[in-house]
Length: 559
Image (cartoon, rainbow, N blue to C red; front, side, top):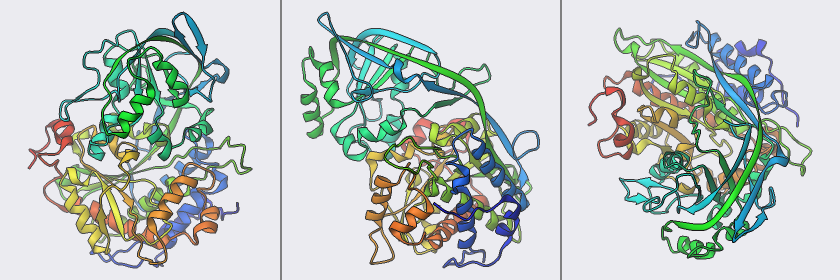
């Protein structure tokens, strides 16, 4: 692959250039520059940055580039100690591959499952040595929700036991609410005293994310940000063991159960929620992990607001700068996961959004806080660290606009706005998109649980209304099927070395930087509307997330 390598010394010319070919002008007279988006992407997705692995030297270079761009625009540092950086302390853990063991005990007979064909596991973030033997209990999807009448642990005693659950969640749940509930599975098991969690791969999951895809990342390290006492965030000391099991191997776990795994899968096909029961078997789970203490930077800059009072409130614009580094896929000579769409495109759009704000004749009433976070690919780490250790008061963060993986391969005609239907931001997004002739569409793939898979979710959990936009499946070009292109990208290039400007151009034609300019204009106008509207964003009264998070920090009463 050959890319133009844009050195940081030339960056000032990128951000101050006035030429552009974006197709539409915003209400302020400013318009996004497609050429600037292209330049940022070519640097951030270049081979020289080696896939921007969290805490790597190359990610540090990417972060320095981003900070220098924001500084060149005249934005003020908003990190730590007067800098543009917030260092995130982390633990990096690696699994000793030959240490992973899963031994099933049935009627006095022990059978070892093959690693990684039958099961795989990751490193432990808390323990260097794990050796757990315990009875196993099936708990359906492993979900609990009063609002939706779910309690998969009803009547089950899982204290000191290994919980066996299905990946995914019931189809009856609304997409974004389901995504939130799905993210709580580990915590729910830990709170009930489980010592391990075994997750079963299902036929439905195989259709959207094949088991074999996960094996490409077996040697990837795990990471977690560290709390002030040095312990990993979201850690549960009693929950020591974990494994993910192929369905062919998982059938043996139900050898003594009242229902077979095939029966359970039939229930799933019939849209039934399986009930839990004791499996009457036990298992031994073992693994050895090594730990290393590291850090990686968030980049944070601010455009101060113009209103004497509202300038103390902040609209937060986020994107993640990291990707997944080098691949261990032996089927390809290309080992660099360049991350052109994920998320060089999002960062490029954030930087161009920052330029639009910096060039306004007068700053908006509220301040605009640009937060480019690390460790998204490792579990939203940089964003979660910022949400728990914000460089501005958490109660002063009024709303979040998140930029992650806009697929700029066709002239999109619609967008999906995750979170927009839960807060007053819905109307703001609709109006901003309409200015560019873009419609809003419903989530076309709720099974992917996208709402909880990007950085905005960490601020949602702190009560901050947020919106995350994705390019939709409709195309303005009748000769291009946006849905097919998006699906093709996700299936063939997502988290692979071919998420690379040269490879994508070869398959789909020129990258649509002009579509990136449209995307920028929309996000800019969303943030501008939030910044200049007297009333801060609020959760809708009947929103699920208002009940769960909306009353945090005594924000204004919801409407």
